[in-house]
Length: 250
Image (cartoon, rainbow, N blue to C red; front, side, top):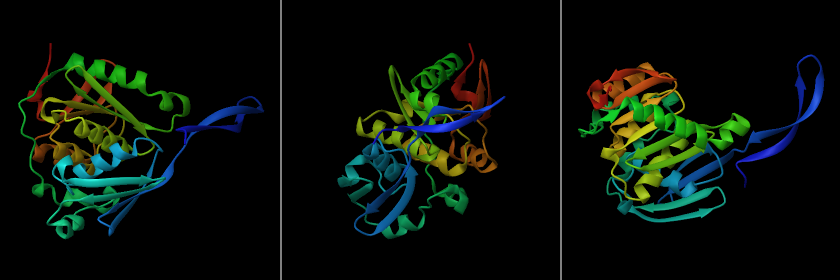
């Protein structure tokens, strides 16, 4: 399935006229774990293996990709078998959305980021420019969120209708390729609640920057877990909300 489709719409300005338009495709995706636990998501129909891998890591259901025994994808169903001696305990901590409270109530159970990695402000601005340039579906439809991971000269970017899933796909891609998350930073389009930030912390990424706003839960999560959180990256400015020592100002 394509990431977007062609439709017909009526555009109204001084008059109403029929115009061709593009809209982003979304679908329900299910992840079934060890034949039992099943979660449902709305996602874009691409990179489902990366999504599932990043989701399992970001939610703490596995500690590394080595804990994923198998993964079978049939249309929109992802069947995974994982190695987890305490799956029943871990599954109680998994919430599908920050609307349910999720990890914001359990941030003290998350291992803090341990990294002395630093990045120049100019590199953050450059990464945003590259991310926007790569976001072709967003430019065509306006219907996606975008996330990118920068590791040295490596730049990986994914779009999705869900901001959480976009982050999962980037983390999953990085994990599958064995990147060093502790020497990486993420740029991202979307607000920053605790549940999304904790995915990044669990992977070990020390810095995240968004062109949007943090939430109060995200602010507290970043502060308590050692994550450097930047918001409102616009043009040549941004706000640093936590752990500013990782940002180099030229």
